[in-house]
Length: 296
Image 1 (cartoon, one colour):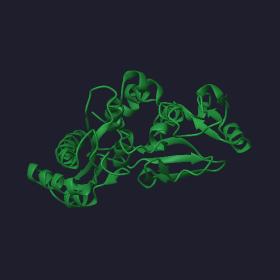
Image 2 (cartoon, helix red, strand yellow; image 1 turned 90 degrees about the vertical axis):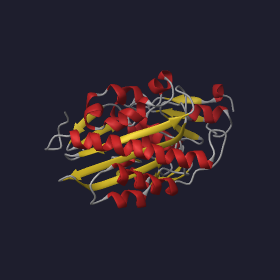
Image 3 (tube, one colour; image 1 turned 45 degrees about the vertical axis):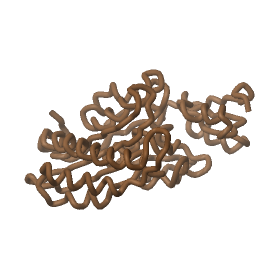
Image 4 (cartoon, rainbow, N blue to C red; image 1 turned 90 degrees about the horizontal axis):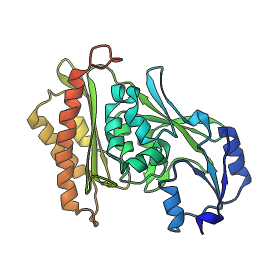
């Protein structure tokens, strides 16, 4: 199907968008289009009607509310990078957004699209999962789910037919907490992640109270490195501890060999990036002021 044959619809509200979807056959929701339009052009997706979400104000904006950073589904990586709220309270998300593709793509893509496309190499999900993000969806009735429970497989999610992802809710971390996202791409621009690792640490009296290591691009969905995360809890941070955790994380990824890297290469990069992510997460955790709501 040619893109010229597709009808574009421009609702102004979520309710109007849902109504249009229910009335049409072969309809798809369109946000930034950086994934969907390419898929249509390559014949991977059929769509007779595209319902553009661009004019729905409720899907825009970044706000701080009730201990969470609320990010509208249409917010672009460029907006994430330039947001004082994100850079202050969720710097790992800004790091992940900064690592995405080119300036042009960062200005067009959306956080909602990066999530619902469910591409294993997507940059934002690992950082968001490590930060315990929740997503809000709407199909006439709003519901929330943990992002860690959202992905079922490549391009498969729990999102139901006709449901719109409306916002991403990221909790403001407590004091002595830090998250880091580290990525390996083959080029500086337009590079898909070969391996991505996000790590979170929360400290209490010098020991690790809570930990999470999330692997991206090395399995059909983002993977929580459970064994590596759990072995950190209750221990004092050290180089030897982080080396041990990185070795465990290396074995918890399930990468494939393709033109971007072999299984052996990806496993070794999991180990290296996990160390880097833990090191930076520790620095960020140690720099947070008591009280949790403020950053230096």
